[in-house]
Image 1 (cartoon, rainbow over the protein chains, first blue to last red):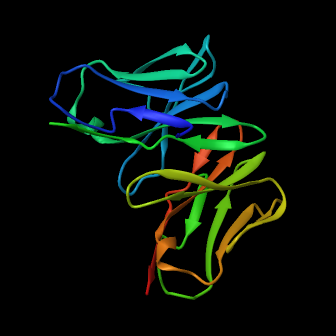
Image 2: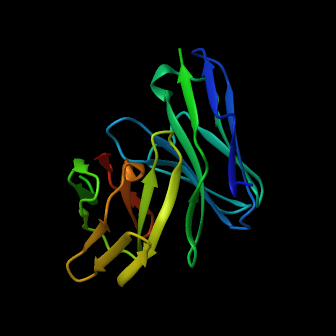
Length: 111
Length: 106
């Protein structure tokens, strides 16, 4: 079984809709991240959390919100999706000793 | 400004060739990661290193902290090595390179 899972894997939605992307991990890591990837650009950090009660904005947090429901779960929400949020979204966990682990990605298309 | 620069951006090699991908960074880091992203999109961490050299099978990663430079080498390349290779630096946050797209031709 995968250590980091994301649901859904693919989603097509319309402008203005609310979307939630979910991430679960079995690594037992405290640190979790949400990134988006666009063609020609590196991974860009949206939000990160170092603990259940800790939420931090990344470099491109506008238009997004997150919820850390438990150590194992970190959800990303788009309150009102817009076309330029079309991208590949990755959830990741990390541990200072053992490195970084990525989910399989969610391909989101906003029409 | 890019804190992490990779070269080359694209690389095509014949099967069996020795491949080197370079990463230079400008920030202070505690560790450097090499990631592999397959055409399907999934990302796998290949190495995490903070000094010296690591080897897994045909893959070798080196880092020179003083020169702020890391290299990823692939020996005896194979078509299944075709992927995007991403350098990521862990400082007070993670900084990502834009990736090197490798195609290995049979």
